[in-house]
Image 1: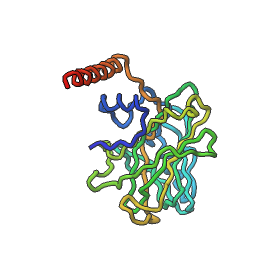
Image 2: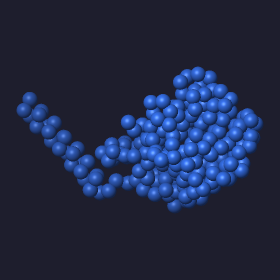
Image 3: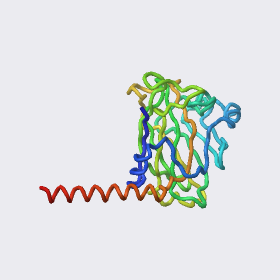
Length: 244
């Protein structure tokens, strides 16, 4: 069963339900990190060390990075969610994060989507945060990460598992529109694993297919159909009231 974590403007939510939306239904992609071209860069910068910087986007422009408090952190590029590579890190402490930066000049109605999973001893709670200066970050939404494997199945190179997909509509955040720089962080929000235990030093978390895009605008005929359904519902209510 598809698991999608999202915050949607009410109109967008109606359209998404009507269309049976996938993890991302962006009208346009601004920047995307699949880690298929950049995996060699990650491997060359794998550490150990507290920081990974300068991972280029495969689509559009921008860079990905990460920061941990532990100098023993290893940054690697293991199997992704239906692909050969993702970005992974171990030695997670509360406040450690992945970060993605790009420009949204010429764009508004910003969305973010990605795949994420943790090992059994990796972090289980994260917070999506945003910024336009790279210094002051605003929390947008907290969420739980699924453990890789078990009833959800494991990440592999051939098929993408939607149980690990997260999608957020940040259209209500006007400051992200037409901005020279926008930053998104996935911040470890607690010291616990997906099952509620304590995070281990070797516990890892993976991120894949991080996409910054533009929310799809429903086509006029779709709005007409929804509007017609709403009018029909109102008409039926009035008819029932007269009959009663």
